[in-house]
Image 1 (cartoon, rainbow, N blue to C red):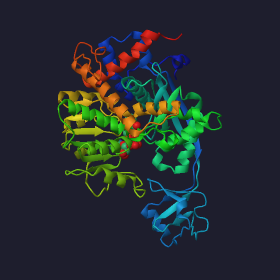
Image 2 (cartoon, protein in one colour):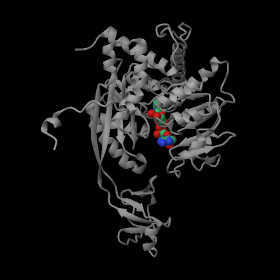
Image 3 (cartoon, rainbow, N blue to C red):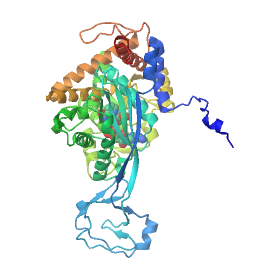
Image 4 (tube, rainbow, N blue to C red):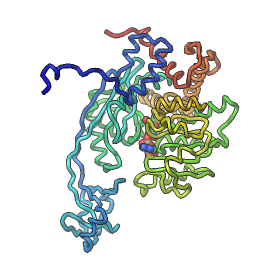
Length: 516
Ligand code: NAD
């Protein structure tokens, strides 16, 4: 048996490779290259705060479909005619939530807790129970301003992942020159397996617990994977509930609906920013997007808006992969038609699969479609070294956060595939979040044209600085000044972006010092 002494001894440090350590590789490389101040490095290597807490909710009664072999036991069960089908909410996993008095007034035939619906299937009635969910908020750094970053609702989240995403926000806010730091958080949950009211209750409880940790000048959440403007509205309501100066608190979250203080152009901003970077990439070569082709992973907020904008600029979408599968059309996929298909309420999984304007292909074939560009706009770690070897594109513009692994990055460099890294490519979202936050503070409302004009200038200015750092081409033009950032030698674009971020953050510590 182990002695007490052994229990007390700290385990020997084993350098473990995690999502966070992988994501920080580029930080260390850039920090070495610029000789980042040692104390600043220590401040940035780990987050300021890592919060983990739990949210509980009472779930509703559900109808759970039986497998065909089990359903045979109920072959003679009468069909239950539902008087109020509105009360039934179908979920992506095939289950049905019973809202309120869904079955009241209906002719119900129940046997041993089972009933048959007009769709022919037999369902088991499962009473709603309480469930606990793990929630997170990582506040990485606030040297340049309040923590800022999205709220993710997804099954595969962890402290390690949120640390990586929060750090990314610190770099991104510095690159976009918005006066924020970095944060990220969310709940370990598959939102597609819960009803609308359940998600509302879970979100309200989440904000109830988060409230003491955040504020419009402290930490400002926004939408990310699995959340949207509706979730932000609930978060605002819960944060400001009962407060006398509610109207002064709209800046607690960004990505709100424009009717309640959101900014024009925010919903499309991340995809718009990706498109501005790509446009500038080609403009420098004297080319436009006309006739260019692309493949896209993820058809959510970033992917669908990005694709629609690129199509309007003249590019052709050849293939899409999402959580459920992949589709292909060599003549081009009609983006507005695909959007209508995905948003059709009958499409419970919100998937591109089954879109009539394209054929289904395997995921491995998706990565091998020949095109000018690949836009990953889903989850992190998707472009592995193996996929990087197989890609048949000339440019990758990272809409998602961290889609390319460090090994894949090295393969892409070796193969001469150009890269617009995430911390600039998808910075449009946080940039317009900043515009939303200012509008809330000033009680103003800017037009979409004004927002997009500012966004275009900001994205292109900072992207040009990154390109100059990468090529070691220090210069001042009408639009940008890269002289303070070039380091006297060439570096890859991801490293260049990180150098820009670190130099901007370091200035705060060097000039303002460290609070004691
Ligand atoms: P979303 O939830 O709206 O859409 C996610 C999309 O990814 C969906 O189409 C989904 O089917 C797909 N997907 C999920 N898992 C997948 C898998 N395993 N394989 C293939 N596809 C999968 O999310 P979003 O807001 O568009 O965010 C997408 C990415 O962009 C994330 O990495 C996010 O962090 C990043 N991002 C988002 C914003 C923003 O403003 N929303 C800003 C910056 C970065």
